[in-house]
Image (cartoon, rainbow, N blue to C red; front, side):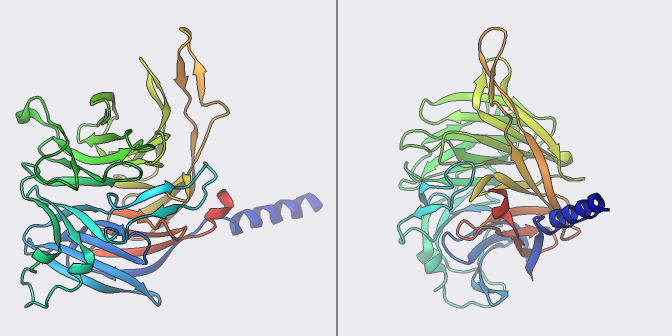
Length: 401
């Protein structure tokens, strides 16, 4: 009897301490949202997408008493596919050790609200949100005059739609990476608009693969930085921006929908690869074997496509994946030893394990974009193809530290 009661109590305690994924607020939109990002150090987030009449949408919403209120709403000539604030922020520390210390963020207030966007016409543009908020009123469905708010505009950054964008500053230069359907990946210094600082173009443009996602990482000092790109055929390419050389190429079995460094401002640690058929791969980026490459573990987290995965800023071992209408919370567990020597005496990486902590069904349409708030642990926002955005709360994350 005592053993049975003890077991029941332990089971109840385990259920009670389990992390929960809770929908805080849902907001319906008049357009399809393709990307969503928190404005740094605020309770506001930006959404970009496409109106039914093919106009571009850029909105900013602010959390207010259990609801979200629009503070900026503009229409642009071309639909917007992606956005980032990453080029604004420099991190003196962004989470510390794997235990997950809270981020210490320092940034110039003058540039904190600058958002970089990529559109369907291949244009790269940076807007000042504070100026967008003062855009004069317009007739319904009319295009907005955003001339005063445009900080940088490169009309033909790519020959086709810009599928993905990512920014990085940290202790180095403010840069933005873009990936396009034309197969090229380009890195831009936001202080100059004449040409990219790096352009990775396909050898044969006629047979170029569609680049679906890009990420900047390894930015642990003013000189070091890499750009990772994922393609529709399952290729992942990592390019060293300091040495101007391809660092490594790897292949997953399905198209790569999203890449995510667990911490972009430290020496490469882990890379999350989200792909078709519900799979997420977690690569250990600390050890590169000349023949075996990087060690990885693969986990099926969804029945459909995994559109995106985001590492928790306050604890890099936790990540949230968005699939076919559900969110899956996972924890990466390191192996007892991260490296072993092979028969030739060379170091090879050892992959850890991925534990699924919880899963929540929040809709019928895919969750195609998501972002964690760096200032509030457990606060997230996600976009879905059902023309809505949701603010989510994930509880008890501190218990995993």
